[in-house]
Amino acid sequence: MTDADAQVTTEDVPDEITRSIHIAADAATVWDIVSEPGWFINDGEWTDHEVTTDGDVSRVVDPVHGEFHIGTVELDPPRRAVFRWLGGKVGALEDTPANTVEFTIRPDGDGVVLTVKETGFAALDADAIERRRRFEENSEGWGIELDVARRRAEGDVNPVSHDVAAGLLTDEADDVFAALADRTRRRILVRLVQQPDDAGAVARELGVSRQAVAKHLGQLVDAELVTVRTEQRRRVHSVDPARIREVSDLLGAVSRGWDDRLSQVRKLAEAKARDQG
Image 1 (cartoon, rainbow, N blue to C red):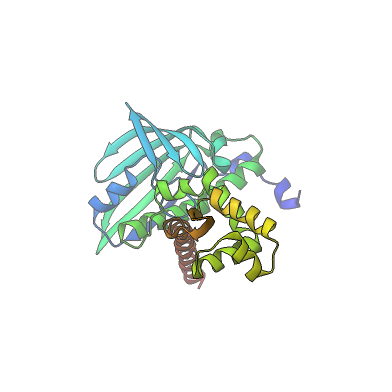
Image 2: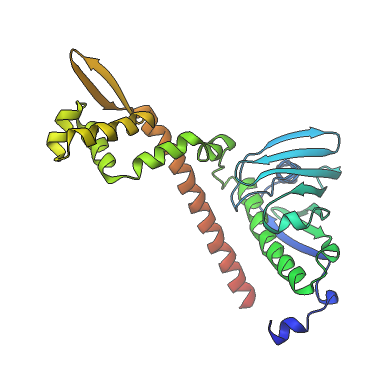
């Protein structure tokens, strides 16, 4: 603990966070985004959620972070939406189940200003240093989430759908990536793309034993990357182009997400530099 840490008291940690951002879109467009319970649960890029609502309580399922329960306190379209954390786990949020999150939208020039206010930090851990850490993490996080809303409203987001994100976390995806992790299996795939063939022919060309190639082919077939058919007395293996396309789409979604995230970090850094200048 540093001397500065030792001097922190409960009074040093504010009870609320307030952040704002200008969005070049109309109020109705922004409202459609911020009025969805739990839209802000993500890793810095727009993610489609499964949302089921019973009265004032919504069950929100994020494909990465899991299940949350969000209470709707007030909806005043298209100006104000207020939610309350009721349960869920994503980092420090599991420790702030009673925090209230309020979004307000007001006209501003060619668009609107979206403001978020999260309150309830006074009821967190009695350790002021820990409370300060959570406060600072959430404060930074809201800057990221407001930029997600801005890019979504301005049509600048490649959303990661629930199906695509969930597809990366299945047993089938584990099989695919395990199959591709081995260099020899990747060499076999490249060879079969050039020409479908049997295990013996592939083994001779790659300089690998027939037994080893047959084992590798079995794993590729199990991962559905390769199909096999019988031609007279030969078992001919070929690459399944549809399956390869599915894998490419999954990886492409991740790549686009990182491109968005890096662009977002760059914009936030530039904005901070301008503020400091």
